[in-house]
Image 1 (cartoon, rainbow, N blue to C red):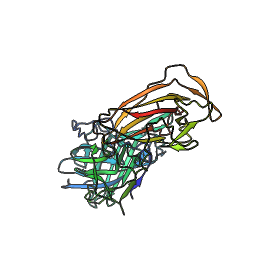
Image 2: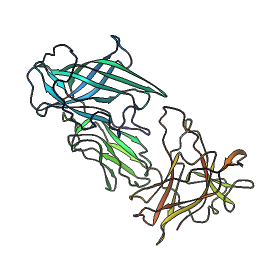
Image 3: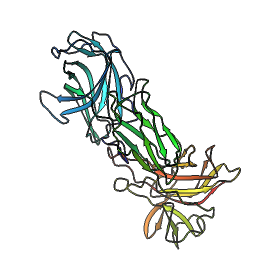
Image 4: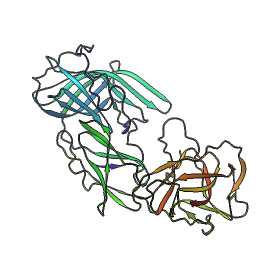
Length: 435
């Protein structure tokens, strides 16, 4: 099935955009055949076959003669007998390694093969295979053995230990699945699409809307031989639009097509409201606008006039609002910048980013000034807060802006491992305009 996720790919160890150490995603590191491999015993193997075969391999892990978590590890292994290359992969990561022929089978000659751990709690968990021998018997089954290291990461702690592996594999008869990770419904958001196993290159993936708009998703992980991850280009999708992931023509190395029934459909967020350049004075008291509260009333820390917009601070551990503010602005002839006045509320404006762009066009990413001045106490809706000084932000428009531009304030994601993140600071905004 095809899975749509709002965070990083399920199982934090599956890192779609990060290349493992030791040769890179496409490195075929052919080493001296001497190798220094430990003796795992004889491997019963027929003569080397021709062509490419793909296997689903289960690796049984042992440490000090005992089983432990995880007790097994599953990955895809593609063996190209003609080129003497094996491609290893799990969801969102793949590597290639050369192998040499032995009398009893084949010996990998790569420095390391680092793959993610299914079910790991935190990003960074991996299994590294350093010494592997394998063979394929007359029934088409793969057997083998190896050694390496297991790294388990949990919050601020990590465990690394030496392990040995016993490999068994069967022919790959299951089609690949695709997983979306990131802010897929936010038109500004970055997201990746990871395959559950290596795909033969070239692999073409695209988003297509109902009216035929097609957006190619370039390969972000792989080589000229294989692909395993794709990335949304840095442009703004259209709001309130359905996009389907077009997977036609994509298969794995065994020829199995992508597993999908009706395809993957993404529906982007509703269009933000159009903001008048009147300092928010025309907005109704007690309402929200573009995701922010209309701040007004006696004693409230408005910046100019009777009203300002207020995006509240919050604890990202307990709640997450990835897009707390989004507004459309009209762009006139000769306009070059977006400006607004602001002051922070209970924290710096450093855990958020500002995006500017028109639908279908490129994205400008900006940030506000880091707070270094003394804070002053204030009250918002009866609650005590600490306020920063009034400052002015000025963000240049993208070069391909149309007659409308969207300003979005987005919270950087937190993935649930390591020290708790700081409170996401709030902000009061006023005098928003395009000049």
